Amino acid sequence: MITVEEFKQAVKNSCVGKKYDDFPQAMKAFIESNFKTIDINEDGVMGVEEYRYDCVQRMVVEDIKVIDDAYNTLLNDDDRKKGGLTLSRYQELFALFLGDNSEDCPAKHLFGPLEL
Image (cartoon, rainbow, N blue to C red; front, side, top):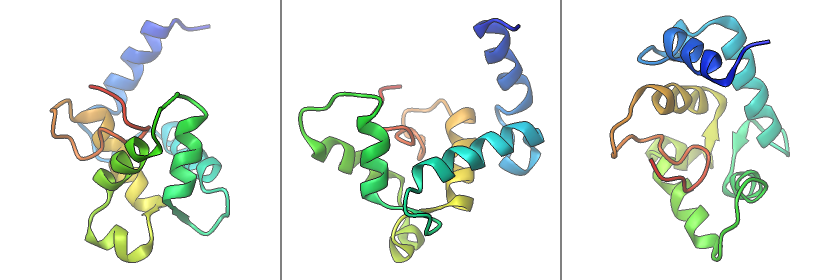
């Protein structure tokens, strides 16, 4: 068994600052599985409704607009044309979430309207 600190250090050593393609296979499998769990209708795109559902399972918000606003910060023009986040875009954002600690990180709301 490993501790939380050991796990955090392992993720830091193997993922932080790297592109998704350079992640260990186990981490890639975890990320893909997580996306599939969120993509409830299995259309290959995480739409706003699926994002909302994922968020409200983990947090309480007074107004759904907060979640919608967080979701919209994740989208680029291509995402909007596709109707949301595809698996490849989710993978890209996941890598950014792990590796970019700046306040303007494009992936800072990948898991909801969380504070840095």
